[in-house]
Image (cartoon, rainbow, N blue to C red; front, side, top):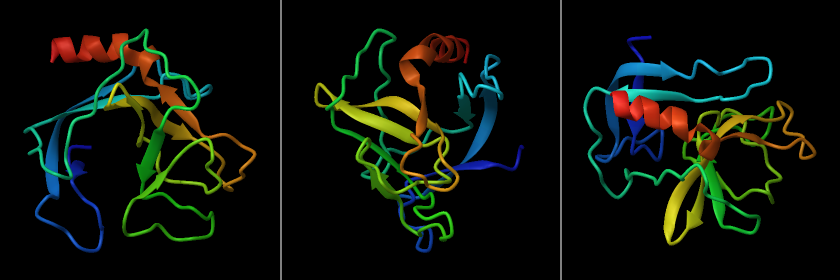
Length: 160
């Protein structure tokens, strides 16, 4: 929708700060290989009409190379404002979770980042796709694997 905006730099949804920016979306790029049945290739890229201003709360993340490996035991974090209880309400400030020790369920965080620290930099490894709607700890959270999507990402970046 043309009225949608991207909000960056927000930390507390009840108290806007000077770092918070609302940015207009210029163009939406849906992955044509996305399969609703299998939820494969679950990624959409947004081109902003104007660049975000970098600050203490707004910074870029590194993209992995298609051949990068992220073995178990790495420091990884996912963040968002999703629910941690299927009957609860969304928090006003974002939560961070460190998989696989996750025992709380971040429902509503779809599209959020899974970043891992590699060579001293945070790298976008996954994009939250889906998980248990009942916050069942025996059901894994599922992420779109960014290394597998890099060729498509690169083609969009090169053309835009």
